[in-house]
Image 1 (tube, rainbow, N blue to C red):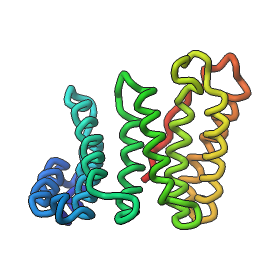
Image 2 (image 1 turned 90 degrees about the horizontal axis):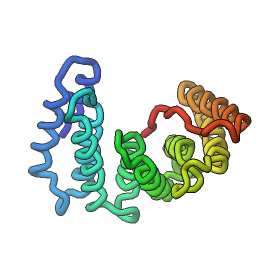
Image 3 (image 1 turned 135 degrees about the horizontal axis):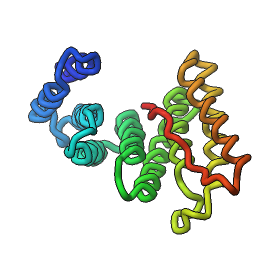
Image 4 (image 1 turned 30 degrees about the vertical axis):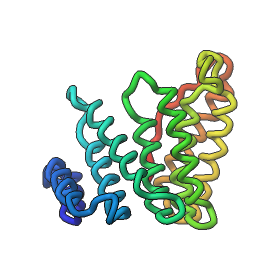
Length: 218
């Protein structure tokens, strides 16, 4: 398990192969099964999923790796719960939301609705009082999801003024938290998102309200 973490970090610097990290995680799962080691199993599924998502999506297997990542997050969530494993539960729900939101799928609206549900589950643990930075990460992710979701999924051409307004409020709150906790880079990213959303709201009804995705946050 630890070897996989190290190899995955090195792969991010082009000093190792991400496939070797995936192999290490899969070997660790032979021991850390969901029945006897739920926390380790959940973390391994999370690491497997992020490894799949870190691979290039330029070939035909990209969508398959996205599906494997979503499956891994869901497998982890089968063995942890909000009461006994709140940290792992919130981590998996947040990252599942990210995977769904950024998946290259023809079912974007459906995926975004599922992502919102996952973020809301994560926010049951990641409160502003108990975990401010994790809370800010998740509401920023939720904001981006709302930014790209029509107010009425059954009538996407009617726009998303209400969701844009909600997204702006979430981004503004996240920026405040990031600034007060010394996360200047994240604060800058969400501040830029606020500015762009404000421009889109001013341009309505002519603008479609379609936003550019910001970086997903863990």
